[in-house]
Length: 595
Image (cartoon, rainbow, N blue to C red; front, side):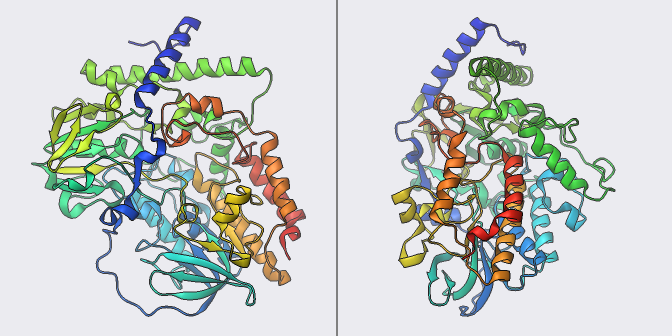
C-alpha cells in the first residue's frame, strides 16, 4: 500500500515521471474540440424534462427597470439585492421552467452540493432557513432558490421557458431592447447578465453517438419516466437494464453508486479517475451551527472563505475536506499568497501535494477489493489539477458484481458508439441505456459563446469588442461601450470554490451600481482608462500557474491539456481582498462610472 507519509526526494521524482506518463495517455490532439454542444447539435439532450407542454402566451412589449438574464442563484441574488434597494420592476428570464439554474437542471439520483450547505446556500440569515444536512441534496438547494425568489417577489415579472436571443442598446431611449425566442421585445433600463458558469451541457464527440438505438440522456436532463425513482433512488425501471455511464467527474461520482443499487448492470466508462475524498455527510441542527445567533450564516461563510483563501482564521467552523486541504488550493484559485523563496515554496507545496494524493490513493486500495480495479481508480496527478470530489459511496460501488469499470485512457476515450452499445479497445459493450455524465462547458455562457449577441454603442457586439481589444471590464462587472450592462460571472473579478458567495457579493455590487445611477439619473459605464487600470491591477501580481496546469492531466481547468495561460483573468489576491476592494470603491469612487 502506498504510504501517506511525506515522500522522499526519490519518491517525488518517481511521482513526477508517473504523472507525466498518465497525462500523456489521456491528452488528445483535439483538446476541447473533443466535445460537442448538446443544445446546438442534439436538441433532445437539452430539452426540459421537468415541464410538460409549455403554455403559450402573448409576446411582451412592455418596459421594466431591470432585466436579469438567468434564473440561477446569480440572477436570484441580483433580484433580491435589487429589491432591497427598492427597485420595483425586476424581470428574471430563464430557459428553465422555474428558478434554480444548475439546481433546476441537475436532479439526477444522488445529487448534492460539495460545499457545506450552511456556507453554500445564500441568504440564510435573511430567510431564516437552516439547512437539514451538512451537504444539501439537490432538491433542498432548489427549494431554497425558490424560497428566496418568493420572499423577494421575483415571480411577479419572471419569464420561464424563455431564452433571450439578443440584447440591443438603443441610444435615443437610453434603454436595452430585450428580444426572446417567445417573440418578446421589451425594454429595460438596466440589464444584468447572470447566465452562470454551468449552463451549456456538453457531450463527447464520439463517432456514432447519434446512431445509438437504446435510451440515452444527459445527467442534467435526467429521465425519471424511463428510470423510475427519484433523486433519492429507487430506479426500478433499470432493474433489468444494461446501463453505461460516460464520465467520472463530480456528477459521475454521485450518480454511479445510485445506479449500482438498482440497475441490472452498470458499465462505467472512465478516462481519468477523480480524486474522491471522505464526504461524511450527516443531518445537522440549528444548534450544531450556532443558528440562534444573528448573522451566524455570514460569519460561517466568511470563515470558510478566509480559510480556503489561505488566510489565518483562528478557528475552522466548517472543518471539511476543503478547509483541511486549503493549502493545496493555491494552484486552483488565482490567489497570490506566496511569501519567501519561490523555490522553497514550490518544494514544500509539492511535498504536501504528494502526501495528500498518496493518502487518496491509499484510500482506494483500502476500499476496492479487486486490485486491478483499484489501480485503475487511482488518480495520478496533482491535487489542484481537477476539482476534488467527495463521497463515501463511490469506491464501494466498484465492489459490487453488477458494476464494471472500463478504462478508456489507452484509447484516449471511447472509440465509437454503435446502435447497440459502446466500443473501447475493440470490445463492444452492449447497452440498453447510455447516460452522459459529461458536465457543462464551464464558464461558457450564451454571451461568451455568441449564442446571445449583446450589441452596445454603434451596434458593436461585446464579443467583437473583446476580439479586437481583449476582454475589458472594470471589476468584471461593466464595460466601456455597453452602458447600463452589468455582468455577473467569473471574468476579471474574484473566484472561490464557494461560487455562491462570490455571486452574492457581485449581486450586492450590481444593486449598488443601479441604485447610484438611479439617484443621479446617470448611465453606468466605465472609461477606457478605468478598464486599463483594472487590467493592470490584475496583471501586476498575477501568479505564475501556467507551468503547473500545463503539466496536469487534461480537464477543463487546463483546456484539456493545452495549459491555462497566465494573465489578468481574476483578481490575484483572493476573494476576501477583492470584496473589501469593492466595498471601498463603492464608498469612495462609484461616481467614476456614472455618466
